[in-house]
Image (cartoon, rainbow, N blue to C red; front, side):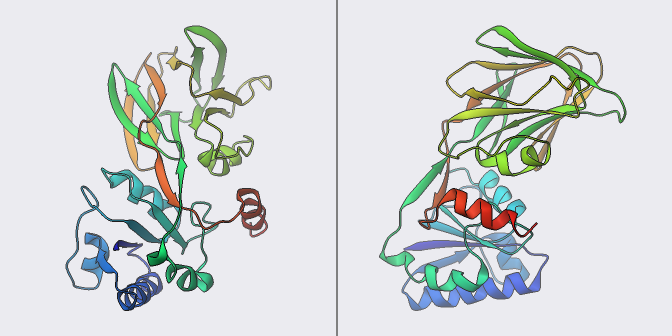
Length: 270
């Protein structure tokens, strides 16, 4: 089995634990290759995430490291996250239990698909998000006028600091902090959460991913688009973006843990 190792590189303990994982997997007969940044931190050679091919990618870090890994891989590879950050909703294992589970990987594992969203502007795909795409004003204390069109019909119009378009996976990230609901990741839908809306009647919406969804910026104020906090785009004024379900879902190693049990455990640490 070919294993790709990824670690956050700003933490010596995380890098040391990644080396422990490598040692365990080599003893199990696996072909273990670190990605480039992880390898350079220890003075060895690795491979870039773009174009990387492996049976599984083990990521030691927080949600940001996992998001960056998935963003940069051209071909979806099953990801197993070991939490070395804050809460770590995307990481299914804590360091104390990780090595025991990792030893079982060569015997086989199941994979869970997670929906991603693709954001289009003028027919071009700007990027793909596992957690969320955020549209936000570039001018503090100035609000955007936003219209939501579903299947060509205006479903909502409001003024706010911005809008989160989240996946069910991302419902436990920024969307939750902004007042959105926790959504079962098996649901195929777009979660829309206004950011600091002017009217209290502007509430979150959960819309089927089978529908045609457009977000229209109706004010002359400039806005930016952030995808998973990794990529930033200038939308300019009076832009329209289209939201689609990505044809390439993210893949995660299934550690056989109930999603709601995990959420309850993680939230108790906050």
